[in-house]
Length: 141
Image (cartoon, rainbow, N blue to C red):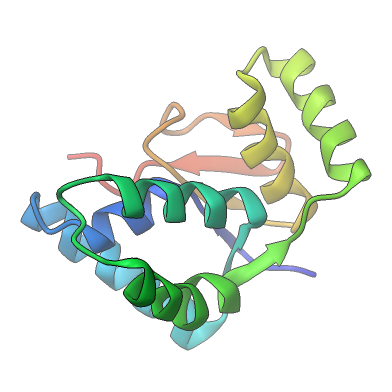
């Protein structure tokens, strides 16, 4: 399993939520390119977080059936990192080494496990490095 880019949950939320037109368009482009070129991936955690946010936020107006379609067309084709004992152990190591929250450590551990070089996220510091992985905030001005 290897992809160059790992996409964090916030990218999918902005794709689904058009409140901020600039972020929506950037997210749309990122997701469209990821699906077309198969150059990006996500983990089970991103799928769960995206479904949870999309079904609970007023700005995202998708019902359960529409989310099922989004799950099948967008999230599942990109999901390469399932939950596993090895991933949880790696997340604990990442948490201790870089002093991250557990859920941020789980995202970083998933990106590292997938062999990604870039993590697209606005939740971590732009330019921050975790071994060979670099955080890129695609929404940064």
